[in-house]
Length: 204
View 1: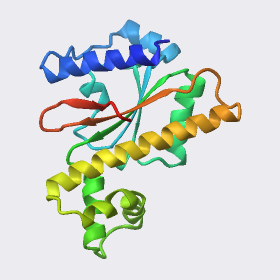
View 2: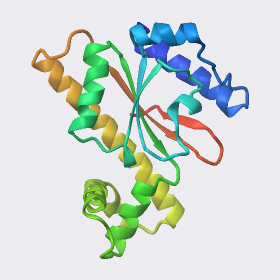
View 3: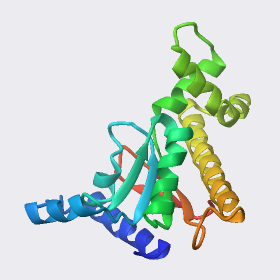
View 4: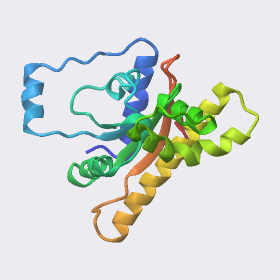
């Protein structure tokens, strides 16, 4: 199993290939499929958004079996998402978790719009999504920011918030003896849909 830093290096390298138009587009042949059918050995967890433009395996130029991906709108963490992340850490031994936000996030844009100017046409589930993101975006609505700057800042704050939640969660598991080995490294990152570039946040 790769260490967290080795896994992060692989993500950097794959992202550089994707960004520079040199992605391998890895093909998984019959022998590889048979090996994967026996067991999986992912070396990184990516917690990201469901947005169709942000597929982690493509963005990081990785193949089947390498990334354990948990995707839901706005990378929100419900019970099933937590269980998925815990499975990869506890059962599969993965030691790197990347929380991947992205530019032009529809979940955050919806929250900004609805909190600033509520409407009556949201479904109950979408309203719950908005309420989850409210603590992130509400303070920004009081600042003199352009719509683009507000969306960008909200995305980054939301990533920081999720990173903190994941770190605290696994520290809590470790403190009660539910986690063998070291607490996983959790880092935040953002994908720019227009440029294809992933920026890792050093301060997360």
